Length: 368
Ligand SMILES: [Mg+2]
Image 1 (cartoon, rainbow, N blue to C red):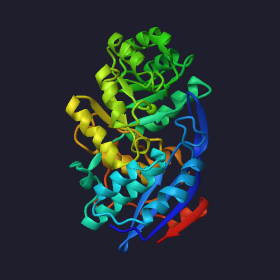
Image 2: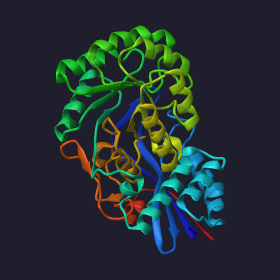
Image 3: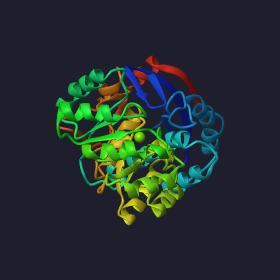
Image 4: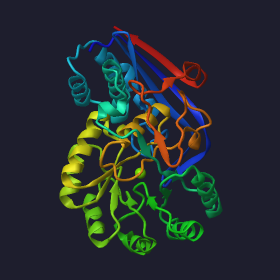
């Protein structure tokens, strides 16, 4: 595998509604589309950190810099004998997981095209669809939260995930239960609680939630283990699990029972699969989360969510759920709570270059 040319396009697409979590809010989605050309084929990836660094320290600007000044040029000067070699080499370079995910996932698209198999088959997924769950952010009023859930539930989403933070938790869950009854429901705090808040979660247990996603800080694995011993509801870790070593430590402590795997957070498919496989060995449940990304990243998430043992619906939703437009064709749709996976080789979605132009913030081409 020799990479002849890489085109980076930073795009920005407006959201229908701001996406607010415990520690920040975005009204536009930034993504860096990475097009890697090799032997007549073009593979696409996406580097998709949250703008405003409130999910992690990475931003679109920091990833852009790394991609065009170090990671991209380094890749051009090399010859790789396999996808595994290329992916392992990239993983060992200094740099952000989000930036690396842009390049690494493009290599998987290239490889799937070369082998003429759909991406999900290359990943080892036998299913032809992914089960999709609805995720909603924080709102100014409970009425807005309930209205948003009511608007999207008819698409058949297989569970609802709401965001919580200190001061906005019990009443929200109570209101959702009162309005929608016994729907599959979970909450995500994006690391906004601390150890002394355990009584709030003990109170939340009576609502029968599927899981409590990342209540505590990413590094607070010991506190999370204390909480998991005190709670019957499974704790799901997201921000805590950046590497396989993080997973091993959290698993040894008993900090969680469910892992949310995000391809972006862990630096690409190779690392995501390693975490997935280790969870399978340890008997821990897994599911596939999203930032959310634009269409390329979302399609990658859906492909991975078709793996056996992804026991809970993915956060990948329909393109129009968040975005006024998207850069892939066709757009991702959810019918009956499912996303049908493409049968054509590679990612299976075309990249709409006119939309890359329309939403472009910056473009950079590097070639060997
Ligand atoms: Mg999360």
